[in-house]
Image (cartoon, rainbow, N blue to C red):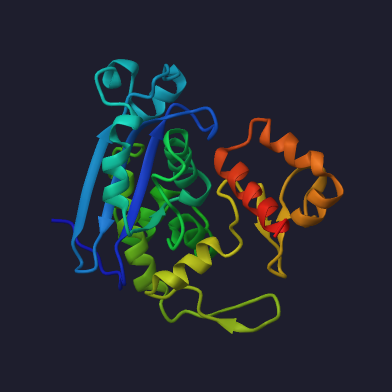
Length: 270
């Protein structure tokens, strides 16, 4: 039975996805594993294959080992969305590189079905890769070897990667709790603690949308993080160039980015 050592106020769900590709807007999930770490130290694991409704490119199948034939009789994401949402209800979210890929990909799948079926409000996000790259820059396999002293077998299997990530975060907390670093101003701080609030701040302190087309600057202001307006306040750009909003909404940007941008625009009118 899998257990964990995290101090939790509510469950935290570790997620890993295998997909048809890496384009959040266009690609689809073919396998999802969720390891839900509960307050009592137990872990509930749910692993599901998904029919993506589109061909899986051969080069992608060669990486994760899932082919069209493997998922042709599996349910679609739409068919399992309600049960997944219920399983994740009340959970914080975590993974390895999850803030940049797994969570935004999962959010996109839910948004295609119903904008209200899966809420992100009041959730915290912990990214083991962010912690790892801050403290020991390497890959998941190396992280698993470094922190857990084990070799990661069958990498790119959703369940293997998910459970390995849970072990890594537990080991990271045990290794780095009490370790202090200095920030750019020379002030000491303790970045890693057995507290999901602290791990969330470390992983997601400047997060606005998961594709990171927008981020928070050092003053806590929402700025664009790409293109000609990189570094410029979103509100200033939308005031000066209202057509920029329409350009983003009508082009190939993730639905989560469009939703967050729309929320900012609506607040500007209040």
